[in-house]
Image (cartoon, rainbow, N blue to C red; front, top):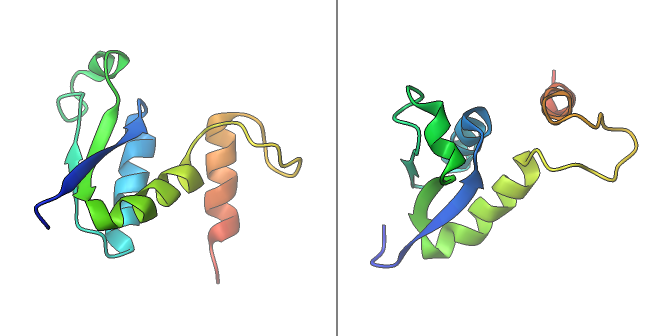
Length: 98
């Protein structure tokens, strides 16, 4: 990591946080999780502050793109389900290449 790390907020949901972390690691980014829920033992703590990921400044844009891709925010695409979890499952299933 360079001398210029930055934190990228990835939201309040632990499951989404873990997916983003896995995808970033798979993409070759060196990332460090900054969990805000005592490793899942105190999920209410995330109501106060989002989970974050520490990353090198030069990789921050790529990490933000991953966050946007996996985000549970509603989509305007009519082919995707509207609920957050259903959208996530839909994206995961349609991204599997056999």
